[in-house]
Length: 263
Image 1 (cartoon, rainbow, N blue to C red):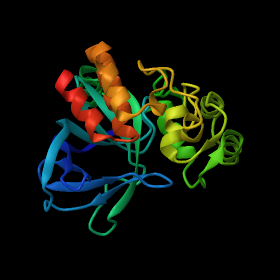
Image 2: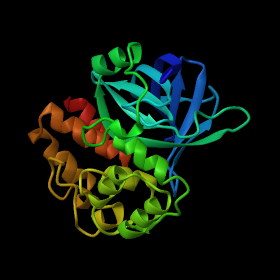
Image 3: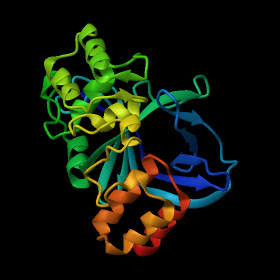
C-alpha cells in the first residue's frame, strides 16, 4: 500500500514551566521537541513535566508513504491546527526506547483538513515520485529533505545545490533549491523555509534582510515592546502568521501571550 497510517488520535504540544516544548500523542507517547544546531530533533520523554501553557492541540496522523504520487517516501507526522494539518517530516520515524532521538523537520506546509483526511482514506494509486504535490512547499519539501540527508551545515546555496546533485537529486529538487536566497544556511530548518519562497536564511535576516511576507516590517530587528505595540493593527490571520513565525524562531513568551490575548 502507498499509504500506511502508523498511529492516529489526539495530540497536545505544550510548554513546560522550564520553557521546554513537549509533544504528547494520545496521552501516552511523550517527546521533547528540541531546536538543534544542525537540525531539530524529537527526544523520547515521559510524563514528568509541569505544563505552563498549551501551544496547540488537535488530531494527529503518523503516516508512512511508499511509492505515493503525492508525498515523499518517508514517515510524516501531521498535526491538526486551525482547520489544517501542519506537515512534519521524520525521515527515520519517531523516537523509540532503543533509539531515543530522531531528526524532525517542521515544514511551513499547511494542508486542508478535509483534503488530507480524504486522501488518507482513499490514496492515489502508487506512482512515480516526480508527481509530488504541485503546490509550493508541498511534497517538494519532502523531496529536498530526502536528497539533503547527511549534508554538513552551515552551507551556502551553491554548496547545497552541489551536494544535492552529487546525490542524484531530480531536476525538480534542484529547481526548488535554486529559488532560495543567497547566504549561509545554518540549519535544515533554514533550508526548508527558503524553498519555493526565495527567502533569505537566518544569518542574512539578522543583517537586515527580512521575511517580506510578515505583516510587520523589519520584524526581526524590533524589540518585544515594539512588536507588541503593532499587534493592535493586525487581523486575526496576520496575528496567526506572526505567532507561527515567532514559535519557529525566537519563541518570545511576551509576544506569544500578547497575541493570544488579541485573537
